[in-house]
Length: 89
Image (cartoon, rainbow, N blue to C red; front, side):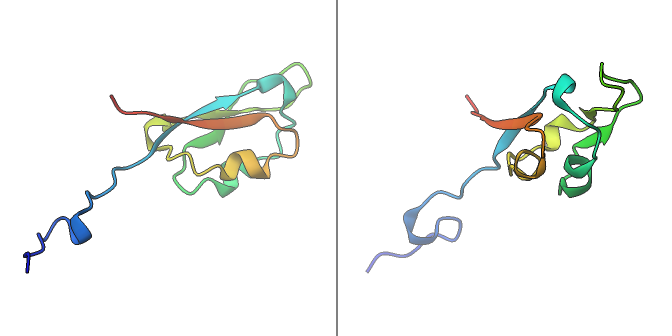
C-alpha cells in the first residue's frame, strides 16, 4: 500500500490561482456601476473621466487581483466588459 503524500491528495497537484485580464469597451458603458459593485476582488472602480455618451466607465485599479470569475461580464447590461484567462508560462 502506497503512502499518500500530504501536499498531493490522490496524487494530483494542487491547482494554481487563475489570473484574468479585464477589457473595458468604454464607449458602450452607461456607467451603471454593476461591474464595480459585484466584483468580489475589488478590481474595478468608476473613473472620473467621461465617455462620448457622458457616462463614467469603469477602470481596473487592481488588475493583478482579477481571477476571471466573469461576474462583471455577466452583470453588464451593455456588454461593455469582458475578461479572459491569462496563462502562466
